[in-house]
Amino acid sequence: MTNNNKETERADLHKTIWRIANDLRGSVDGWDFKTYVLGMLFYRFISENLTGYLNAQERRAGDADFDYARLSDHDAEYGRTETVMEKGFC
Image (cartoon, rainbow, N blue to C red; front, side):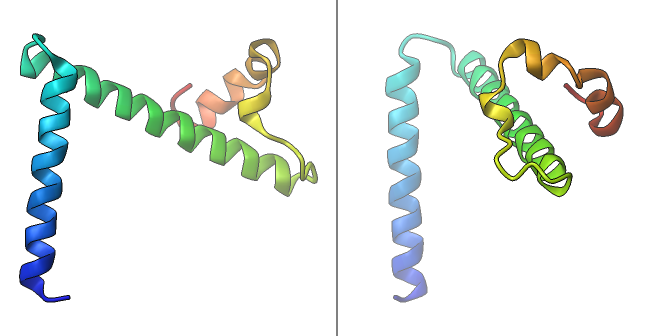
């Protein structure tokens, strides 16, 4: 595939994503929508980062079946203070 084809595909993808975003946001102001979406993406990043970190820690400690995402809220709260001190966010 040539660079020109890659650039064309990238431009087409960009247009498609932009069109979908416009359809989804409807009458919501573009800036408000962007702020909402970026906030959700950041929250997802933090959640996935924290889950990966805690899963790795528990697996190193010997619990091969541990999955932070499956913990109840009550059980997840157990190590919150230490996790915030280690990671800097909860």
